[in-house]
Length: 107
Image 1 (cartoon, rainbow, N blue to C red):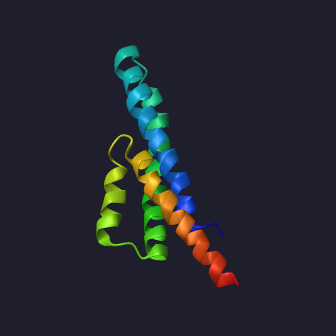
Image 2 (tube, rainbow, N blue to C red):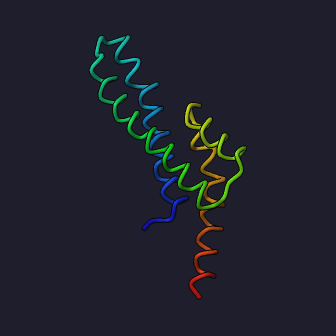
């Protein structure tokens, strides 16, 4: 089973990229080029990743015993462009701490 914070980092980055693609590529194609089908495809992908992101935050928060403030920041990051990329710096530190704890506990 993967590390919860590692999973959150992967899902968070994928969700962040899908949000930027939705806002920066799909929406302009819909309104400037008359291609609404692009938003349907990218929007569906982003919606699925968004739900997976929420689940990943809950899993990582339970595993690492995060505060409600930290959880709230993670959730707000999902609706702000570039938010998951900003949070990734914090997740990387959490991931390293989690992996170090796993190594210590397996000895």
